[in-house]
Amino acid sequence: MEKKLYDLKVDPELRELIPPLSDEERYMLEESIVRDGCDTPLAVWNGTIVDGHNRYEICHAHGIPFGIEEKDFPDKDAAMFWMLERQLARRNLNSYQRSQIGLKYESFYREQAKKRQATLSGGSNPQLLQNSAEAEKGNAMDKLGKMVGVSRDTLAKVKELDANADDRTKEKLRKGEVSIHRAYTDMKNKEHEGQTRVCESCGEEKPFSDFSIPSKSKEYRPICKKCEEKSKAAAKAAEKAAYLPGPPSVTGIGVRNGQIALVSTGLPDDPGMFSHVIDLFKHSQNAYLVAFEATLANYHPSMITEEHNEMIRQMIDYVAETTEKMLDQHLNAQKEEK
Image 1 (cartoon, rainbow, N blue to C red):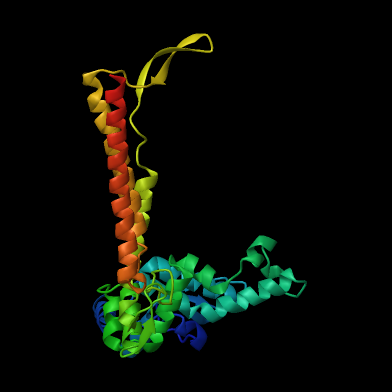
Image 2 (cartoon, rainbow, N blue to C red):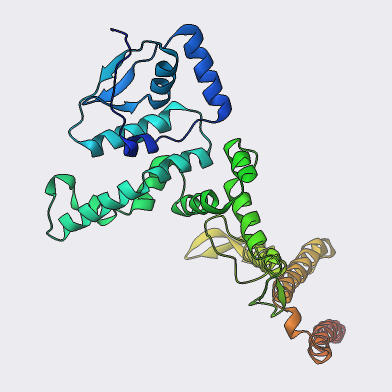
């Protein structure tokens, strides 16, 4: 491979697709090239750099010869695809850095989606259509997200962070010191500082910081964090109730369809069977408490009044009184039988 100071063309559009190196990365690359020379050839297509813009600048600044590797692409679109794949494969990038690279290609992907849609609807550029299914789901952000390994909502958050976040936050994102979701939430809370909104559950007016933003969304939830926790508790209690084991049963030998089989039977009148009876009572007790807890979680602050509290207490008292009456009636009936 011949090395010399090649005079190559720099396409601004292709150069802008490459995320800039940090000051530290640039310093380390320059120090390495000055010390050891440029061992990695620059990728070139029709005399234009497609990979190696930073090395090209450093080599020309210090008069260091370099080699080139000619690439054969059918068009500029293919060259851009190759650049994207190479950038994503080259470094140990976090989600924020990968998203930044992907967003560099947003306009390109949007144009590709338009061309695919035109082809699907009978337009031109049929060579861009691999199959109709690909054209139907040719959404730019979805395709970019899939390529860089994040959701379209995450890409949208990164786009907004790059446009509005302060430099310190962006640096922490590049270093992986803060997650995209956390940085986005902090930024939105700062934007809405001093503003309030009404919770759709409890009806109270609260600061925006009292509402969360789902990881797969850009918008605040309609209910506050406190009500959100109550809803989660209610859902958990309901799930617990759904999986509550059935009442214990006692099996015995019986005849079913002419065949001897294990069948559920009533408990015999035997003091040794009381352990089964108490298990049945415990099951009934637990089922009631789980159901009550799940219902109670939906008793929101806006509903709470002395009148409503009294109605609920009356229901609790009714359950206690009724079960005691049922027990007394059962005991009296057993005495009469004796």
